[in-house]
Amino acid sequence: MGGIKKKIDGPVQLGDALTESLVRLGQTVRARNSAKLGGGNTGQAELLLGDAAPIEDQVNALKDRQRAGTRTATPTTDNQAKGGLVRIRHPNRDFFLADLFDYALKDDGASMEAPIFTLATKPDLSIWEWKSRDGNKSVRVMPSVLGRATQHDKDVLIYLVSQMTEGLNRGRDDAKNRTVRFTVYDYLVTTNRGVGGDDYRRLQESFDRLAGTRIKTDIRTGGQRVTDNFGILERVRIVEKSLGDERMIAVDVTLSEWLYNAVQAYEILSIHPDYFRLRKPMARRLYELARKHCGHQAQWKIGLKLLQAKTGSKSNLKEFRRAVRAIEADNSLPEYRLVLNDNDTVTFHTRDAKKLLAGIVGRS
Image (cartoon, rainbow, N blue to C red; front, side, top):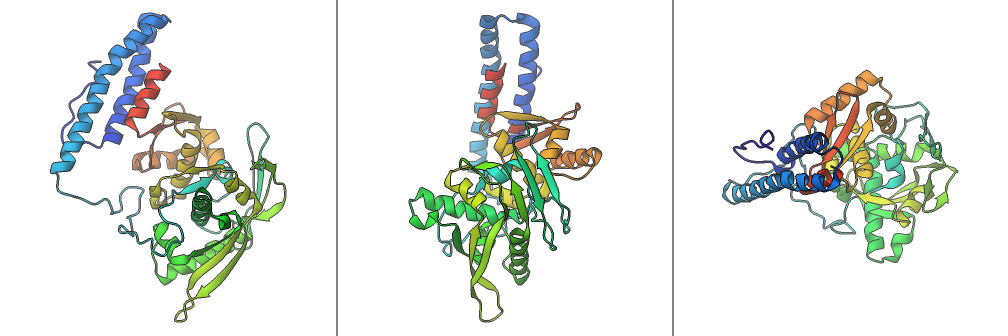
């Protein structure tokens, strides 16, 4: 293991430094096992234990140094914009207006799987059709004259799904209704948006695109196959406005049966709050795919062309490769580190060093 060890000076960012070290470890261990053992399982286990132990010592040493650095370093904040992340607009989040407190952010599995939301930042008026590789799932998305719902519009759904899921977890009867009432200010703060007049106006535009975008799908949600032609949101009703400037204060939103079925059946996954800090629609979509397919595994690998289809990108493969490379350079995806390999495959590695080490040892 002499070629893998290296001295680490200065402050240590455990997630990034160890991810790189452990990925290299896995490659080296597998190469040595193949060369030395030729398939002998007992010897292989002994070699793995011998090679993993120094790295585990390195992990513990890095953790000790990081804890010591935390105690002695001058306190800093991570609220500023950096790389592919926008700054945290509300570092002292005031949830007193929220109906439900401290809920985990959730994303529904159905819209995580299919590229329903456009990555475009300008109105997308094209009809989008998608079919899974096995042919068992298909989606046809038809925009209104205002354009197809965007990846940033999806924040509304994540917020609503999170509210409803928390209500179900607490056994609230009103969480079984398809209509959710919420305060607009709480939505803007929760999703790391501003709270000025333009932010209220942009939310209204999101409502219009979400209600106007029609979907025809045969994806199963909650054990039911929904084949209707329906809007992402069935209804949006403003129930209270500010007297001074006509801003929305409270809103009733009725979810489509398709989305409602997914929530009621708990076909959802928690997502990291930094999702809302990601600038690029593509970065948000890549994080969603990593969260769904990598999940609690150490890593997930996929071909670049298939990844392009899953994201719903309309660019050619060369442009898509360049976009993925830029996000790799940003290194801003929450929970996962993206690597674009030379053979046009993409690997998502967890930033959890302990989980990554366990995955590498178990795979080798």
